[in-house]
Length: 178
Image (tube, rainbow, N blue to C red; front, side, top):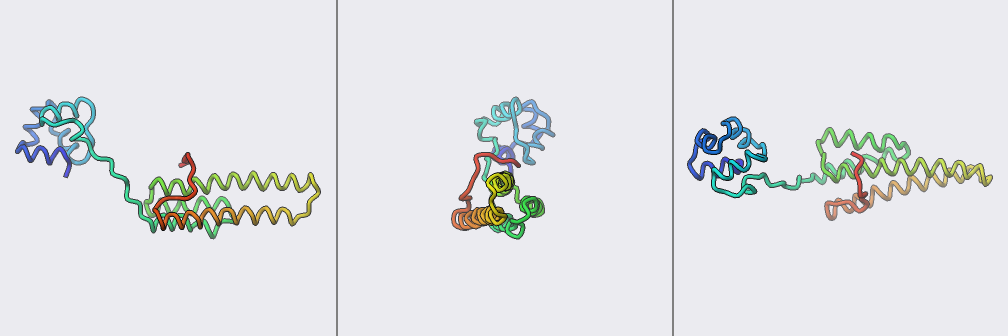
């Protein structure tokens, strides 16, 4: 039940009476009682008509409950695709959309994979150029690839432990790409 409806019913006022007293339409009252947040003139008028403070009518912004199982699934969906960087982004994105897990943590997990993929591509290209420049053998490229894959595995596993333990991420970026 919306706060407006609760207060209105406590005062034993109909929607029509409140609309007339506040100078707004009945449809506006219906929309607000259905979940739309009042703003500006409407908020002030309704608060004055009901004799309450404006903040009383505002909807509390509750933190979205994060489904830890969905977060773990998004996080672990990277593992089969650590050697194919585009898929380590696409698989978690698909799972996020299918499971409707649009939490900030889920978005951060995918942002980390995008960032890691960019860094991995840069490091791999640098290693290739340096291999030719310093006449290193081809095993050095394999070592770089293995280290890149291991670094991604470490990020995924460490974040999984932190999600399980505290419901947050161990590795976080100060920005989000999605």
